[in-house]
Length: 351
Ligand code: 1HN
Image (tube, rainbow, N blue to C red):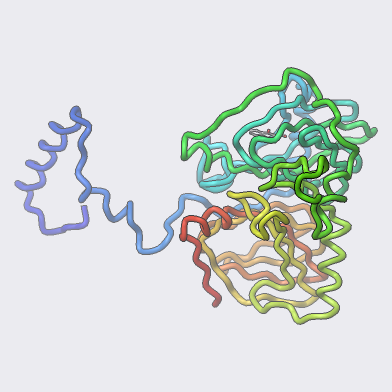
């Protein structure tokens, strides 16, 4: 209790009262108020970095012991060390590393939860969304928006590993989860691979009322290829000054409304030119970053963290973050910013 002015007599009488009211499912606010309504974010989430090769070793060992079909999804959860057992990387988001070995399939299902995939290793496996394949190349971003059927397959001769990012804890928070299995490995093919990108990915969309306008109106696009976003960053870096706090930063958009890629998850990429150091910035959206390219250094509330390709890091809410690029540093990041903005909670501050 924050009031230091209670007498011993008062305290023991209050304790006795709490004991009596507990069976009636009543509990005093004044004992917990300070920890409920904090003057600034006070998170159990801690900063952490996973080296890809370390996680990969465990994932490959799991691959020797259980098939993708047996597991339904063969994934190692990147669990925040501050939230053991909670199956989450931040309080609102989930992250995992998924392995699909040559010839394997991950059977078709759908659920309320929104997912993104960010390719870490391998080239040529696919995710099929509502029966349309997105062939996945290194550092591609592929979405499986909530409610859309999805299955994965690896017809190549090499393992395929991607980072899964989902809003599982957010959906759990609202007790709003529904899921179902299709009952078949793969959804019947609906259109050729690339169909959706052709129709919705060029600042165009099928004319309303045409048979081609078949994707969910609020969430049509699901493939953001590395070749496209990396080229866009390069063009930006040769023609503009980097933002002092972000570097060159581009957010992935949903073409349907110009908003975030999914209702609960925002994602972006950044390029920091060789030698560039950002100024500090903090925001309320705890964020997950993948180092796509380059060596560098991050400071999280002034604690240094070295960065190398395919490192995955989690930065808690309201942590002042700085980056320095030893050579061209390219990062992918995702967070619950989209969700916080809808709730009027998002806040950021530049140092
Ligand atoms: C899921 O559907 C996938 O489709 C991966 O690849 C990870 C974690 C929890 C719930 C659903 C996938 C998941 C998941």
